[in-house]
Length: 213
Image (cartoon, rainbow, N blue to C red; front, top):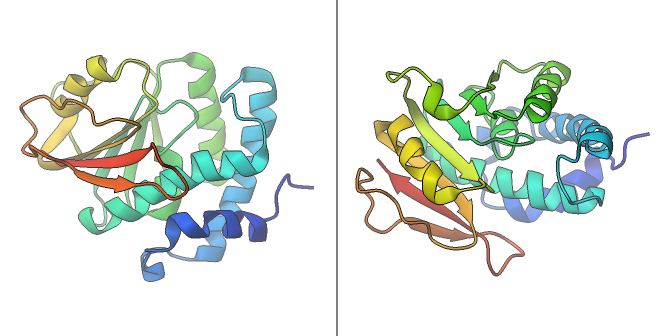
C-alpha cells in the first residue's frame, strides 16, 4: 500500500499548482500517479540513505514535490518544448524530477556528485520510465561548451560558490531559477538586476527567484 494515495497527493499539491494552465500538463492524473510511485520510492530509499531530514510523507509532498512543481509552473511559459534544463546539485531530484514530470517534453539533466544520491536518481528515473539524464560529477567538470536553457538551484550547500558555475552553464538568453529563503547575489553575467520574486504558498520565508541571462 502506498504511503499516500494519488488523490491525497493531488489535494496537498493544489495550492502549488493553482495558477497552472492544466493544458500544459499532459495529464494531471498521470502526474499525481507518478508522484505516488516516486514518493513510495523516496521514502524507502530515505530510510537507509538519508536523502532528506523530513520523514512525514505529507511534509515530503509539500516541501519537496510542491515547491518543485511551483517552480515548474513558473518556468513552463518560459521554456519551449525540447528546452534543456540543468538541476544543479539535484540531491534527491528536487526540483529537477518534478519539473520533468510536469513537463515531459523538456530535456532535464540532474547534476549530483554524491554517489548514493546519484544512484537514487538513476533508480527513480528507471522506475518512472523517464529520459532524464544524471551527471554524477561536479558541474564544473562538464564540457565547457555544454549550456542549458535553464539552470535550477535549491538547497545547494554553498550557494555563493555555486552561482558562478550555474551562470556559466546558462545559455544566453536563458534563465536561472533559485528556490531560497533570501535573495542570492547573482554574478554580473546575469541580465537581471532585480529578479522576479515569487512567494511559495504556505511559506513566509521561501521564494522562487527568476533571473534572465
